[in-house]
Length: 411
Image 1 (cartoon, rainbow, N blue to C red):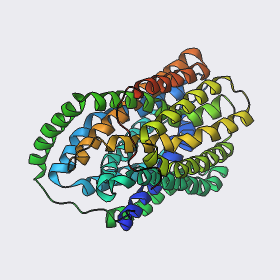
Image 2 (image 1 turned 90 degrees about the vertical axis):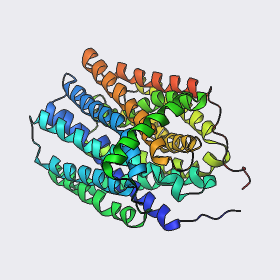
Image 3 (image 1 turned 135 degrees about the vertical axis):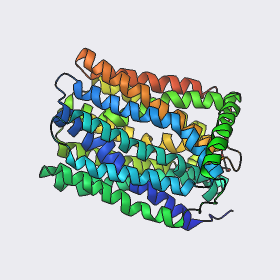
């Protein structure tokens, strides 16, 4: 039986997920979206939904376009770790500046959240690309799941810290707390992850990176299985991203959740997500990521349809906990599934393409949700559009050959 190597690197890699999950929970999912939509913009007629959807979609579109290019620069310039630091510093500094926002600053908030999302999501290209380097193949599925699980713990802790601040209406101080949390717990990654190798000069690396990344994209696209995988991922990840972006706003606007209730709800969801990620860590390797992704998508399709009919807070609590069990599972299994397609030495390029597809998937869903919500004056019709994304992705992923177990079930 093989033992896990690079324990320090794996722990520091997981801690980076712990760090950035403070942003994902407080800024991207629970508190700031509701604050921006209701306090900065006003969401009586769905305008807050519309502006938030635009901000998320535009930031993801920029990342989708630049991710493969930056991934190529990281590989051929040997500056992957430095680029991770630059993007992280951008996100942390912008989050701190969110504390300057007040009612009516719609455009300012719109621009700041675009830059913050670019910093976080752009950095994840380089973060993800460390996975095949720090973990043996037979452990990549569970290490991927560990990262998500530790990330949920980061979400939980950051929200617990945020509770007293939100109760007192100290929203600016809440954003500063997130910036400090992200900066502090990301430090081990910059200390212990593999060092940059110092390859080509930046300009040469940029040209080489662009050329080889385009070649990588064509290579992936002309391989039937990887093409179908990315198409399925593009569609169902759109559903995942839309749920993350709008779940808090839906709970606040349609079901009347107060800020403290939203935090409690999200904390509960994070606990169930953490449990699900740990429980499914080994099965991703032993059952194979394809089976785990498929089961998760069946659950997510069902959850989205049921959410359309829910009118009470109690029922939404129950449904959210069920959904939480599959949140980290589908993302961890997808990342492990894609890792099986990657040849050694091309991790950043391939994960650049992976990120491009993942972030492209966050362009359509939030826009569709925002426009349907503002058109009908209700968020319920928009919920059904999310179910369609999950179901379509489920159908397509069944046609992909691959995603087999990395290890035997008995190991």
